[in-house]
Image (cartoon, rainbow, N blue to C red; front, side, top):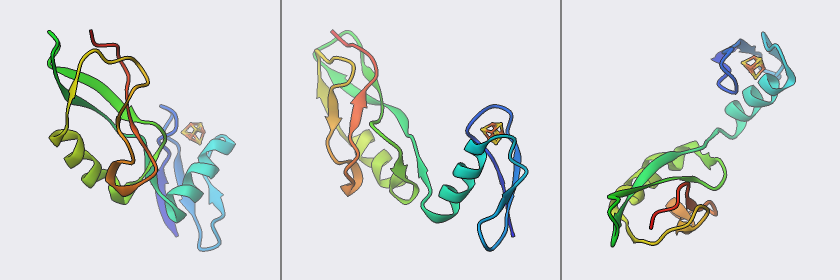
Length: 113
Ligand code: SF4
């Protein structure tokens, strides 16, 4: 038996998952999907900022293009903290391709001139 708090929406339902991956406590189907994924293949969307040169801005906001395996988050943050990108940057530009050896990219979430 595993207990989780659903992080999909602010309601934060308290979920219980048994050994057969039967989920209870969820108020909607998204909670069941979250609990099953969390116990079999946990992932996270990562948001951060990356250092910028050639601009008045010093950092560009960024995020993963899709959820990243949870066990790669630490390595991804290390790469994000080490990389420097050059302006101009447009929303959606790939700033790091295949972060932490995954097939997930780090993309810009703001235009930087
Ligand atoms: S189970 Fe549904 S309602 Fe409850 S926190 Fe998750 S997404 Fe929100």
